[in-house]
Figure 1 (tube, rainbow, N blue to C red):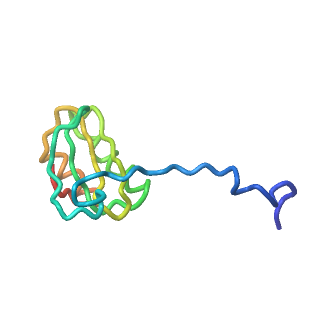
Figure 2 (cartoon, rainbow, N blue to C red; figure 1 turned 90 degrees about the horizontal axis):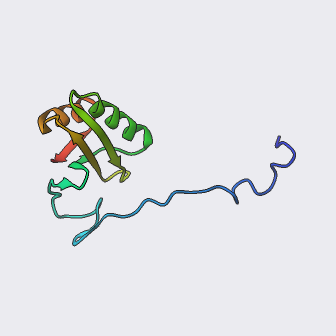
Length: 111
């Protein structure tokens, strides 16, 4: 049974976040047939990660990578079911980042 005042307008005020599509010559980031190359982002080193599907996956990867010694930050741009972007900053090496992502249950495609 609905509480009074909840019958209408519940979904009208709901705010939704639009995720931007990654642009590339081969299409969006999750459908591109071109291999993703690693590059140094403006704020750190970029890795391409597969297997993330939701916010919980993002938190799991960010927590695993942030726990590395000498890591300043880890941030994931989620592409559900596709290739997500992990940007890290700090002095942890790429092998350690790759191992942290793999131990969290996901795959690093490039770094």
